[in-house]
Length: 116
Image (cartoon, rainbow, N blue to C red; front, top):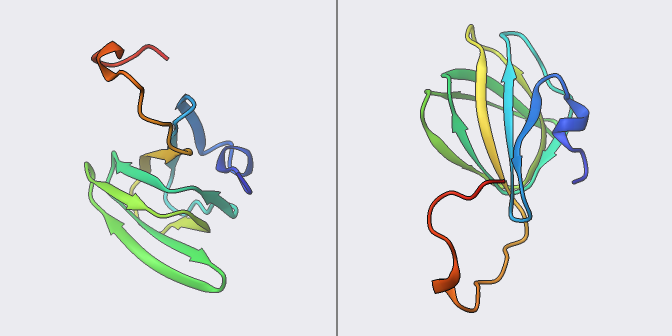
């Protein structure tokens, strides 16, 4: 990844889970905090808290406000962000990696969640 958020903003992003198909990042910050520029591949963002942010990239900015408990698609992008609200931000990003092929015999695949 070009500008891995775990490397550019290590105090805010942590890897919660990773395998060959996905990487799950947890993100946390406080009001007024701004991130360094970083990149995300196609991802699903799940909000654990409600928050307001300003997302900036290439001289453009957009203000967003999201409630807790929603899932949103995040197309691949390069940006920085700033917590412009009065609440902490806490989210998970499920970053997609190249899709794996479908198993030849799905009947042999275990059901339920796998370990790690």
